[in-house]
Image 1 (cartoon, rainbow, N blue to C red):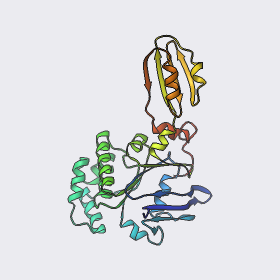
Image 2 (cartoon, rainbow, N blue to C red):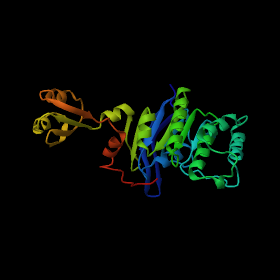
Image 3 (cartoon, rainbow, N blue to C red):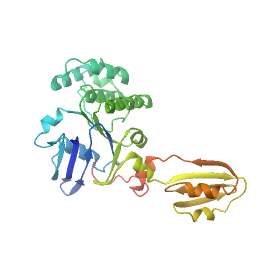
Image 4 (cartoon, one colour):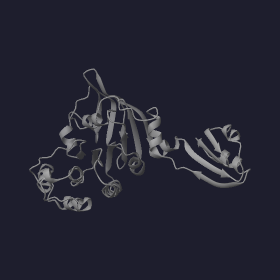
Length: 302
């Protein structure tokens, strides 16, 4: 199986400033790959290097088995790209802009573009200068999607979109995946990545610190359990169990954090009369924060 994206020790420095260092990524056909990191972590640098808008300091990148430098024109013909900063000619209407991109890509007609515009609820007849930031973002998504490329590379695609439009975008990405096409996108919206992605890469200060399936990454986080008993309980009994931490009791209510399985905790709790039990669903945001010492620090270069 030929990988859609493959990088080997991909590195980019801006003078003595680090952009990305030693990046090794594999993205398979038909998957949605989420690329996570705070501002300045190296996400945009990675995307620009993949598309040959930036030249790597060392290492190589291959898209569809082609070298990102020597075959960049062929590669871009197979990619729908939404950059993080999508600059448009304010004098053009959305339809004129899409017709321009259509001619560049050899697309016959704008039927699919108009369908996407309808789903995103954006007016293609208005000049770009009259559109809000969110509506300009919608035009950017349409131009990336309407020629049905085998690979979408999207940098913060839902920035500026309202929740209903975000849901429509999620549905479209599901359709893209079902068609066997591939999506690589960076995002700050962790719930979005959790919902959509097959694999997740987390980048910190230019270095890849995690590369996992979404399910595997979620399994590593600590879950929150709250148990209410009929009578007060000694929390120290639970604190001794493997994988249990941060046990707090308040009368008949006990809260704790748990890694691994819940079997031991449930069996111990079952020795007493349980009134209520709540186990919080794993959240990718908490996993993300563990790689940043409690929260994103914003260090590094973009």
